[in-house]
Length: 124
Image 1 (cartoon, rainbow, N blue to C red):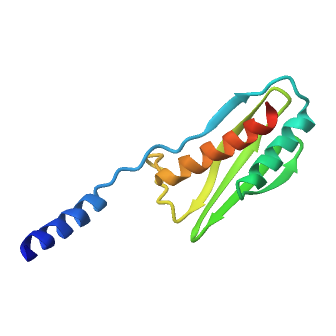
Image 2: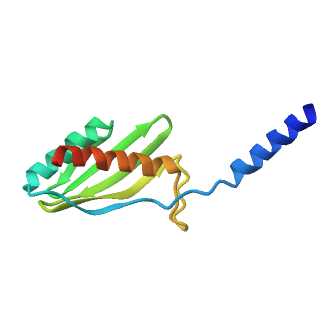
Image 3: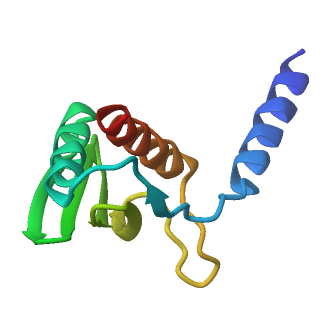
């Protein structure tokens, strides 16, 4: 029984080391219903805050948002206009981002999808 436990623990360590990470997900040109640019901006800022993101307007048509969870940090850029917005990866810490493969920890994509859903809730 003890041997079996040791083998299972060793197999678990090996499997954890072989974990593959998904590609970084960007939301590009997400169409919005008939709105003006100010309404889209407000939906992004409020939607981001609702999910725990810190969002700041860089200039008209561009918001930068940051999410800090424990030791992880994600930064995205959100270009927008009256017709659409995008959520684009900018930087991360402690999420095993691989720029050559374009992969990242799967939680990143979950956070981006949640942010996108929160923005859409405010637009529709």
